[in-house]
Amino acid sequence: MRRTRKGGFATVLGFVVVGAVAGVLWAVLSDPVQYTVVRVGDQSGLSADEAASTAQFGVEVTYAWIGAVTAGLWGAVATWLWGRAGGNAVIARTALGAVVGALVAWGAGVLAGPPEPTVGSRPAGATVSAQVSLDAYGVLFVWPVAALLGLLLVAWLTLPREPVGGAHRDDVPLPPVGV
Image 1: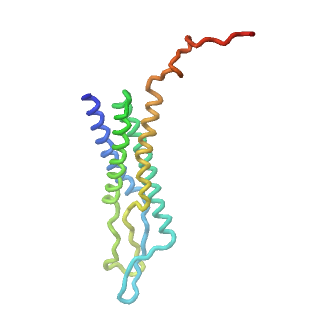
Image 2: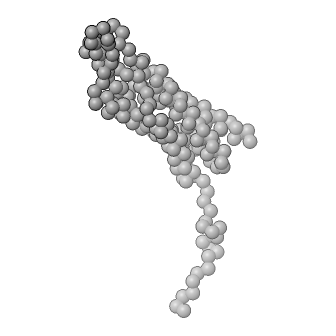
Image 3: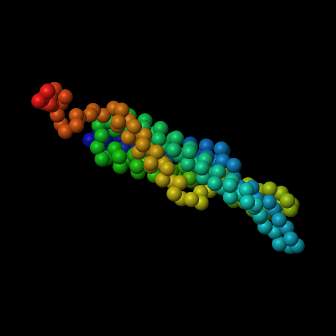
């Protein structure tokens, strides 16, 4: 029982650490939307062209692939270290840890990335980077899915298998020959 608690705590804590690192990596590798400062009379604002939607999609894809790789690897490592005994608790703590890791990665990426864009005293035509953010919240589900796939891979490779139907190969009667 003590080993199960230790493994559960270590799994979730590992997802928090991996999430923080992945979030910073996401902020560094993403190419955020670039706005252009527009001034008309005494009015000023930020404008983006059609390429901005492509850039935002790229930010979210970057989050997804970083999350898939990190969550899948940590899910496999945590299962290898603390979950080879199996059970529902291993699945639950891996899924919960991955959800927490996804949220930590999102928050760390927003904090590590560029700040919220403002016009300020910038001249017309200057470019301003947008804040790294997620618009499609479904991307957060990449983390638990990838972590559970890592768990499944380790379980498939390491857990003992029972023969189909509970019978051993030597116990299966052979069909009659030449009847």
